[in-house]
Each structure stands twice: as structure tokens, then as C-alpha cells.
Image (cartoon, rainbow, N blue to C red; front, side, top):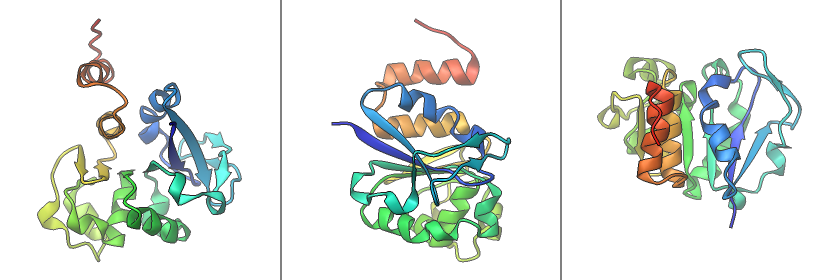
Length: 192
């Protein structure tokens, strides 16, 4: 059965933060990669890339989602993405995996979901400043990417480590192939 991965796109999303995740998932026959925005209309990334998603938020069926991926972008910090909150809370209540990077981790901090799982972000001080409700200091790990339960979080400078954690959770590659992939994209080391 094909697993469905959904990526939320919004005006100003950080396109580079999902640039290592999407090609690998997209080329695998075991996954269906879906992009959505609030209304299904085109959005522009932080880098100016104009993208038309597959679908709109109201058309999503939570029971069909196998993972939700939230890229970063300043819209999380400004509160511009608040309309997605009921959906994200429903995904969390269903126990579905969520992968968030950069400012999207601060959004999860605002929702209080990081208080109970191991996680990371751009920095603990950043997380506390942007998410005053956050009380998960004891679960914060100063690392580029962390998986805690069914939650993946990553620093905005770690799109490769973020992708690696997503691939682990999805079991996209075996351990050997995942390490080869990581060494190629992180360190430029090609191995057969």
C-alpha cells in the first residue's frame, strides 16, 4: 500500500529546507508525495519559486495522511499560518508523524506539543523567545535534527539531517543505503 506524505506550502516557505526530502520520497514507488496550501492556489517560496500545490487544506482527509511535513518560513513567527492549527492538532491527536524544520518547530512549541517529546529547533533561546508558552526545556536537545516519538524536529541549517530523520522514520532506505545517501549529500563521499 502506498503511503501518503503531505507537505504544507505557504507564501514564504523555506524551499531549501525540504529540497533533500522531496526528490527521494518522490522517486520511491512506496510513497505518494502531496503538496497542499490553504486554498490550493499557487504560493511563492522565500526564494521566489512559484509553486501550485496538488490540493487545498479543506480537501485533506486526516486518515489518509502517513506523515505531515512542515517547512520553515517567517509566516510561522508572524502568525500567518494560524489557520492550519485545527488540522495540525487533529493530525497530532491521530498520532500521525509530523516533521518540522526551522520556524515550524517554534510553531509546534506554541502548540505545546514539544513539551512532552525530545526535540530541537534553531536554538533553545530562539524557541523560548518565539514560543512564550513553550515549557519543554528539559526535552530540548542541542542537535541538528531529533526524532522524539512520532515528531521530527530540525534546525533550519540542517536540511540534510532533517531528510535523514524523515527517511529513517519512513524506512525509505536500509541503514547502509541511508548512510551512503548521507555521506554523499553531506560530505561529497561517493561509495558503491
